[in-house]
Image (cartoon, rainbow, N blue to C red; front, side, top):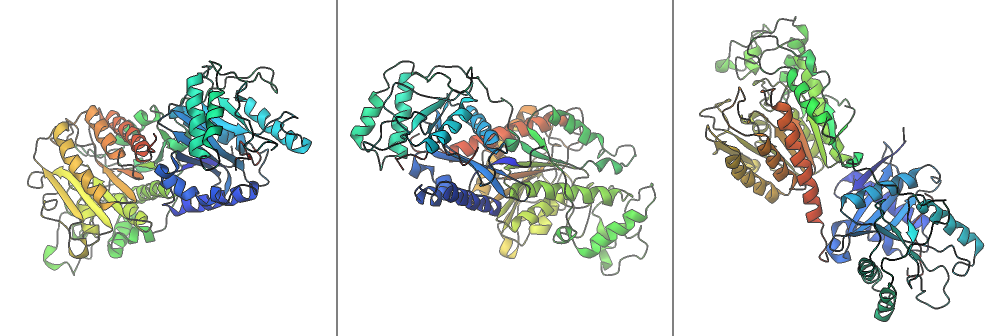
Length: 603
């Protein structure tokens, strides 16, 4: 098992990303001491502002579980011309020969292929004695070219690309082309466009116009010739895997212990088969990367729920036998004097009569919290999408009450955890109102809570979710309820969803938490709406296009005949939308040792 992971750094918003970028800058300065300081100093801005640099910068790092960067690769994408230019690839000091360079290069090739590029271009110093007279330097150049030739990448020949800017300079760079295993020849017209873009956008401050025109005009052979293999017997056509790379998949955190909470009573629809139905479909999709669930301390739960409530819930559940108890006495007239008997006291903390307390309810709910926090933590580690597949659900659990099959509000706990790192928006798309999040964040402006649900005149929880409930104090205007009629189809839902997404864009959150209810599906036993699989996919895509790091927490959904299909289609849309949103937001106006492909005299 490799002792590193490869992940993309999209920006410098997260602290984990800022730490990684700082380490990349250190590697750049240490491994390329003759490169201009601007190469490292400008890296954060290159990620944020592609318009200025006329390329979209794509940074990958190889780091370990403690965030120590062992290597990186920087890809420049020109979407208007459909090519990628590999600017830097480097292992950290003392990390050569560890497989990091090969793993990074293969990941960069996969990214170029996923972007629809016909090939990958980069510069590499020459191995000809006439161009590289120093034997020590030439030996290093040979090693690099041998490395790339293993992937089928070879220098272009019969062109003037390696003409020095200053006559007499040594080690002018080759332009190397990797066809990504396609075997497709490089057309002269394509090469000329690519070369012009490299010289004008990348080296415009250094290359005079007449030099650029001379080099571009030298690409006369059609197709352009590649140098025959020199270091391997046959240049291999190593095609990047078409599967989604691990770092681009949705992190999947599953409450594997959910089945201990099983109320075996007729009509109790919140059953273990729900998770199994969803998991079967997810495993076959190829979109998910299963991750280990980590344990988080009680302080994260206490930040959201009242301590007395938590202590009661823990005590009563762990003392119960296998027979569940249901609340039946609700002491609203004297909330300060709870009943002494724990079973009777259930109504003191509950909002309904159909959510039982059972021996495993606490244990399963607490593990669901760990899943949600682990999924949120994946965003802080740089993942863009994560999913906490949990039961029991949580969005009806308020600060000091349970109900609606919910005991601990995993969605709210995840949002609270993320709120210490930036503004958060919670989007609840369950059929029933997310009264738990509303109660918990009602006076806070840093966590925007939105809920699209059936009108409380007609649907549970009946007492909460009215449009006029907009927040209080500093939180006024930061709670938004979209209470819909009893019959809603996919088109009607999307009209309202677009309104909610516009409000989220205005909030400009660093993170989005989606409380995913699949009980909006046609035929669900707890709802009356009529959404189908294609609607869930469309909804997911609309949410994904926001381009916000997103954690999804499973809430309702009880028709197990379609539950898995609807979940898979939602996440297919979410993943596609997220990647479309990332590409659109970063599109420029124009369209294994320390191993930068070059350190050239153009620098």
